[in-house]
Length: 93
Image (spheres, rainbow, N blue to C red):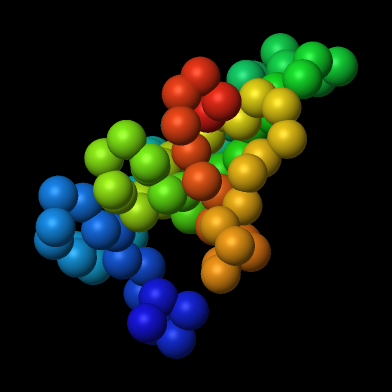
C-alpha cells in the first residue's frame, strides 16, 4: 500500500496515519542537523539518513519516517521490503 500511495503514511500503535508536509523552517532545521551530524560521523561506523528513509521499529511494531536517523554498523533491511530498515537500539537512533 505504501509504495503505491501518493503521500507517506506511518503506522504507530495500531493506527495508520497520513503524514502532513513540513514547513520550510522545519525542513531547514532537519537539513542543518543532517549535515552537522553527518559530518561528525564521517570516518566512523555510523551514518545519518534523512526523512525519506522508512524504519521498522522492532520494539514497538511501528513503521515511521523520522526526520533524521543515525544507523551504526550495517543496516538490517526488511526481507520483503528491501528499502525498509529494521531498527532496534543500539543500532539506530
